[in-house]
Image (cartoon, rainbow, N blue to C red; front, side, top):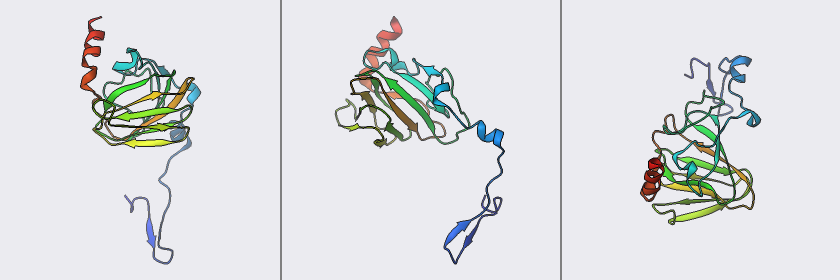
Length: 181
């Protein structure tokens, strides 16, 4: 790839130099999202209708897990990661789940508790605006808004294909009941 882009290493400055890959304005514009134009997905995940897990997902970039029920994604060109914005009322958020890849959470407004482990009690941390955490793939994680008002969290899922969302075994009875109704 470096030869195609005419990239070279300069010994004197000990740095790489080169030219940009070509891209026109219309292609770049396809890669822009405006939060105000994102389509809300209030039932993006299986747990969104369970008490304490009601939230709205705004998919900005890429494709997330196979189970996401999105109303739309603004920019689908991302190849190796996915960005969502999550809005939730106080004491709501995602149930314990995992992905095969790491997931980064960044609090944009409010305060968010991120918790992990089989029962969500292995550990937790609180994120204030612009604080973040990276949760490794395979670790069950959940989050909840612990502020007194609706808050927004950014979630970045790092994977070309995030695969299936794996839910904590403790949620199986609630999902079965929901399916039966």
